[in-house]
Amino acid sequence: MRKFNARNMPHIKATLKASNKIIYEDDETLIVYNKKANIYIAEGSADTILDKIKKLGIERLETSNKEVFDYFYAIKKFKYHQICLQCYHAASSGKANLESPLQKEISWIAKTSGSTIKYITAIYKNNELFVSREKGKIVSYIGIHIDGSIGPLYTRPKYRRQGYATRIEEELLKIKKEPIFLQILEDNKVSIAMHKKNGWKFNRYKIYWLFNEVF
Image (cartoon, rainbow, N blue to C red; front, side):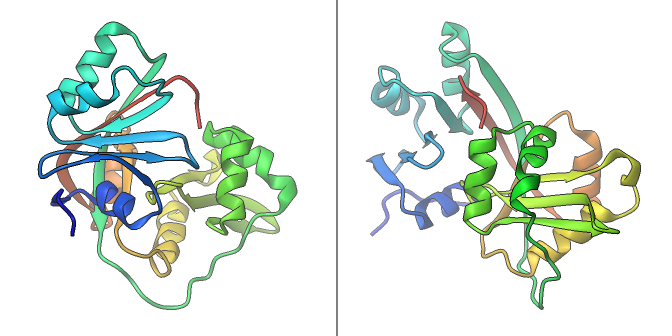
């Protein structure tokens, strides 16, 4: 029986569904390790989280606990940080009109998404990376991150504001298993506005990412 209540925290619901290693769990706190992405995911009591992980050799950390974020930010344990807003969506249905990218397109997707080839290849091998084409050329792509969230999502500049991102996302919603969620950088106003318009619901959590290496 689960001790920790995930409440309205889609990233934790996804974490608990996946085959991750539970480092610590009680009624108030959950600390999990995702080996594929080398991520520690920690929620709950700041005191407990810090007691359990601050001496570990962590390369990537995800949490909604600002006190934990502030601690690691102050001691400069990590090189990079991101603050995201989290939103979620109801399941859809139907046959998805999605196409997988070609192996030779992986490096371009990695470059334009700001991810490593290794990470994008992992998503590709999981059959969770999809493209939309015009005249044989990719105009947009979308995937499902290793943590279960939707992304990366990208449209070539010349095709933006023409509905491509919305359409490929709607297709993915037909096959994505719940929980359906994504995390958007808090200063990405265009993406936030698009998702609000398309019926995504934002919860009250800010998700803090701390990492030494990009994905």
